Length: 407
View 1 (cartoon, rainbow, N blue to C red):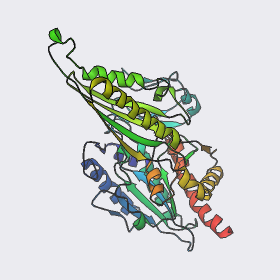
View 2: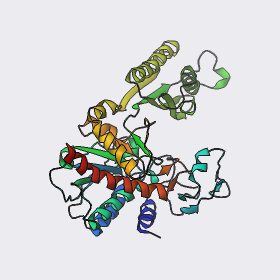
View 3: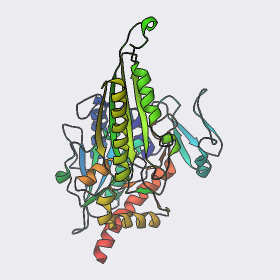
View 4: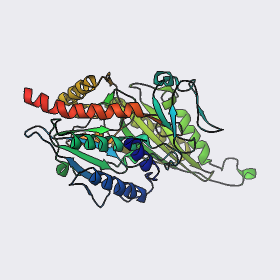
């Protein structure tokens, strides 16, 4: 087993799932635990300035051998998604020859459901056993950073400037950049290494908000409920029914935004709902928020001001912050070509630390890791594509020197 796979297995065995109900930074102790392991691994390969601060953020430098070139950064995150258990103790290596992939007796990853599997014949994949997340999002990114650092430190003939590394907590709950020290990071620009399939590069993402709804009902015995009972759960269903049916994640793609009913719970007396609101267009994003407000206002008139709504913006589309620095996209695109990878520029149907960092003054587009099917039991990683991501970043370091010297 090679060093990259060994590191990946070690990292995914540590439960670093973030916790949206926690107010601490990081939101879970497992992220600090994983961070300490990564710090020691960085030191072992020869990084001398690595630090992990009190909030779990890790900063380090791959020292350059060429002076006077821009310093760029690479950003990944420690935490895994909240949808499933994030501690993966039983990953499976598959030398993929085609067809469905059995995870366990209950769950099979079927080509019928995931037709892109046909494009991966001949690649080596790591899957789950069907009971947990894999953790490729974003522990594959951590492995990539260490592999790049290891390679550049052991190959001093490759010209490159200083490259800064940052590993953040709580990206999956939208708090990754909350305590990020952009000034200390000291970069002209950066890339999050947090994408999916090979060639992926993104500098557009959703505008994002969360809507929190509380409904106060009135519960009485159902035998004497006529003209008295107000069923909070039925009001919740009414809210959902008034939102456009075609604007749900399962019916959208590309630049199409959506409303996602993420949580619904309660009883006749009280109910609670949480929505994710997403759109690439700021105009459509604002219209979606206004629609939610109008629905609640209408139902408050109908039922007597018993619905509370709070909408919180989470992050915004980074495009307007990246386009003035389009040369960093062009450089990544050229680096992919140099590594034999066909660039695939698409909008992110999600968000990233890079979106918030771009609004903090650090232009920060995203690139691929070789991971697929994030946030569920069908998550897997292509080792071949992860290795290509490493190669692309090494080319990026070279091109940063070359393109600066050509100016």
